[in-house]
Image 1 (cartoon, rainbow, N blue to C red):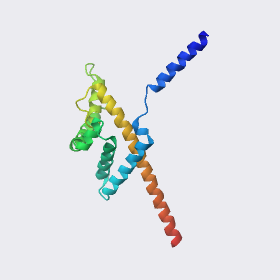
Image 2 (tube, one colour):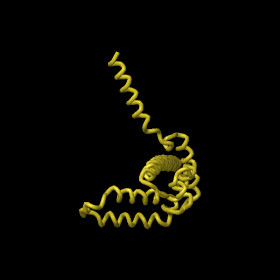
Image 3 (cartoon, helix red, strand yellow):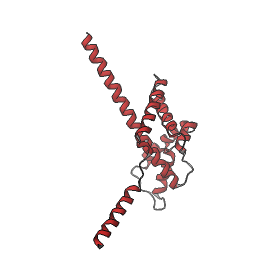
Image 4 (cartoon, rainbow, N blue to C red):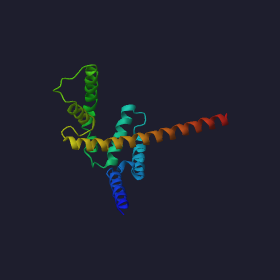
Length: 173
């Protein structure tokens, strides 16, 4: 009787541990379909616009799919980060290059430096608390993972269509 109650307690604890990480909204099939449609429409509108236009279209489609419910999506929709982002990324890269091989003084905590960099990387999070930045960053990373998945699917579809067209052209010739 005691063994069964301890195993029941263990299974409840394991279930609680599994439930602690709720599935992200970005993994939902419906959300991925909505983003895929928006991405395709945005890419059609930027035909021949170059790499920056494709990135801007993909980011805008991602922010629209998030419906402005997060700070990063509102920042993208408002366009605040476009001018700053390139400059900030260059500053971060320069800082990383200059810091290679150097030892840090004991008084400079690394965690705050990392948090500062994270605040710069996630749009709209420059003045948030650490907990809020981590929450926004987790949502942003999940959204970016979905973006990569959708773009890979589009690339595979386009390459498959190109192969089919090439095969048809060879048959016709």
